[in-house]
Amino acid sequence: MKPLSIRDFPKNDRPRERMMNEGPESLSNHELLAILLRTGTKNESVLHLSNKVLKQFDGLRMLKDASIEEITSIPGIGTAKAVQVMAALELGRRVHQLTFQERYAIRSPKDAANYVMEEMRFLTQEHFVCLYLNTKNQVLQKRTVFIGSLNASIVHPREVFKEALKRSAASIICMHNHPSGDPTPSREDIEVTKRLSECGKLIGIEVLDHIIIGEQKYVSLKEKGYL
Image 1 (cartoon, rainbow, N blue to C red):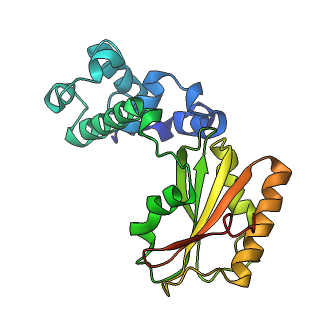
Image 2 (cartoon, one colour):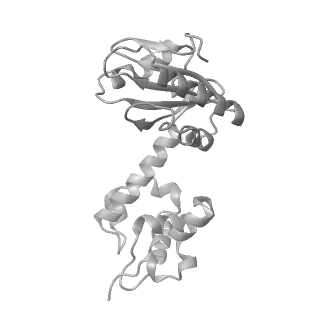
Image 3 (cartoon, helix red, strand yellow):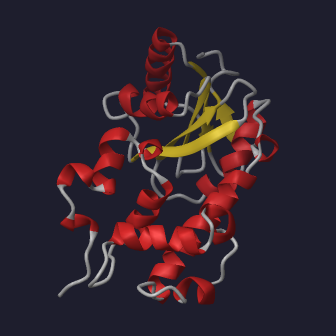
């Protein structure tokens, strides 16, 4: 007899499907834990097993500090399952410890260029990167939107602003590198900048700048008067 897994439950009752349809906040602690454990034992379902784990540790409060040895002492929990649970708890702990003070603040084109210079100046292909900022001009997210030669038809505003809407960003700084090392803007660079700026105005997310990265130097299209 195989171990009972989440798949053995009616589809509408499966935690994984409910998470996808209703969001993670709709799941209880033992349902979230069941997703991590994936399978139960021959005699009990994964949901019963996750309940047993939480009861053993009096909920999440003690589980977050449990050792692998303590977790694997529960019948049905092997090393692999214990490691998965500990990894998830550690990620949660690290997310909780993040503070807004740790976010990089952009106060000038130089700040933005310094943020990506060492990463982008050695790239052999053009990478179009967006920095998504909050109302204090702190970086919420850095995302590579496109790789390849830049033109207005390929760098689509939908891809640029999709992440901005997801992150509730207040503004965007666009950046891309010139593998030649010369950051002089091309006609395509200027066209892309104007197109993105116009789209940003329509949806209320300002494009603050488009910065071109070269070899230890950069050009700000904002400073050049194109924004």
